[in-house]
Amino acid sequence: ALAPAAGSADVAARLGIFLQGEDEDVALAALRALAVTAPRSGGELLASVIRYLTDDDEDMRRAAVEAVGAIGESEEDGVLSAMLHSITDSDEDVRCAVCSVLPSLARRGNSSVVQALIVALHDEDYDVRKAAVVSLGGLAKADDE
Figure (cartoon, rainbow, N blue to C red):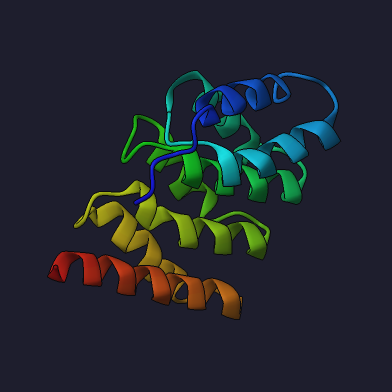
């Protein structure tokens, strides 16, 4: 894996400031930027992102899922449980995003993640089912290496 670009932690910290404001459009933009620029960091920034997993707006929740996937440390306290809760979100795009990022947050053989993805195989939405299949395949491939 490539190392994060110099200064990306500083950029992530600065973006995290915009998660504290009241402007939802700015917070949504910050979440989307964190998903593509932030190094794995966990901690306070991750806690700020996780709170958006339960936002009223589905775009905000999906962006939060993607940001958690980008910055969350493997099986950090509370991260997996928050994401596993989000796999039952009312919005199919959020559920799909959760299926896609879960393998990056879980250690191989994590039975909670595998079980959640198996349940997602029966989701009413085709894209969620497809994401669950791909993620389960990725977890199996990782186990075989």
